[in-house]
Length: 115
Image (tube, rainbow, N blue to C red; front, top):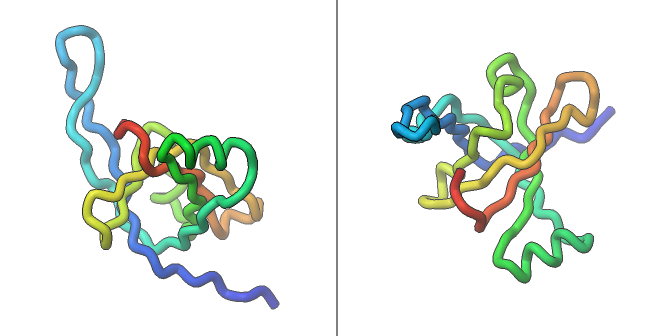
């Protein structure tokens, strides 16, 4: 029997609305798509993580339950901590590590340009 995962964080996922800027770019406001419970795991080792910390970036893995709505999340979206105002994460990769569609692991970075 596996140990239950504690989903203590509340994370919102935002998608940028499509609004043309007149130069061929589609860059509009962020629009919230969904809110979910999540488990936030800070990455602590490795060369990239250490180099990122020196640059003021922190990497995390957000574990969320898989559903039709959460499987629609993509790297063009962003994640927001709904309990900590102003904490925004850029989504780097999305993985279904258990390969059973039970949980999704999302690698995110905090402290980088928004978008």
